[in-house]
Length: 322
Image 1 (cartoon, rainbow, N blue to C red):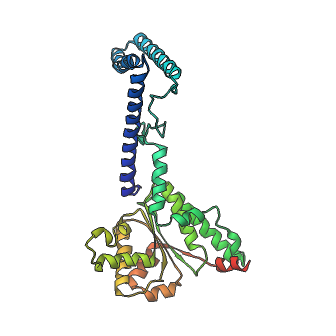
Image 2 (image 1 turned 30 degrees about the vertical axis):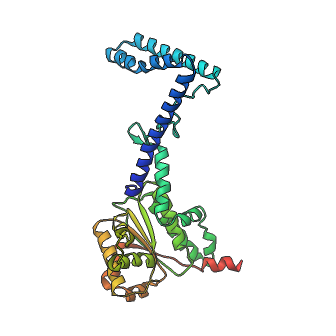
Image 3 (image 1 turned 60 degrees about the horizontal axis):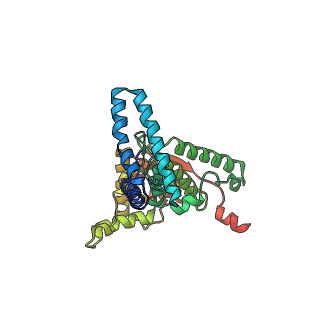
């Protein structure tokens, strides 16, 4: 399990900046009132010595002295608050104003990541996953089995597939989770369930990347043939090998040739060797898949992937019919 490294670095830098800005702003406000409110400067000087006194008393194990210092500190803060209020300032004007009171804008509580930082990493993970718009509207909660009631067989199969997808997301482990291949015609819910799984898996702190087949192969083509002087402008293909979960949608819609087939084999084989799972979906039938791609690809997919055969009637067509 691991958050996207680029996201983590960026957000960690944001937290470092937030903490510094909060302390600097408090220092500025403190200097302001010390200059215009009589008596505050002397109280601040006395308060600045409190930390050392507490440390010394704690080191000596002098509980009575520690209680006395604590009471003295409360009294000094009370006096300062009264002076500030009398001068028209809020009582806590000189205190540090953190965005998160739990971690003090450090992102860490008791040597563990604060929930506020986890939330930002999850939000960033959704954005960088490539499916942020899909995740917003496609979840397990709104995946309706009502669209598969044309036959008992369809409904039972899709009920089973839904249960498998939920279990997969709940139990996901980047090092041990299996690969999944979703087969079935257009509009049967393959992308919807991919989005639903991705949302849960990202929430658990995993780096998920979603791509359409055409976009994926375009990145590899750009990396191989791009002539840009800016290396960052060339296709970023490392994400296809390093992310915790790769979701490939609409496989089979691309123009299939020696280059794209070689790229697909490289991705599938490399991730199998690294034990990094893939969830792929295709509108092709099993026979069409075997005819289109190398035997080495087909044997790995049908031998190493959990095959989920979607069935039913195009949901988009059903919605339009209503």
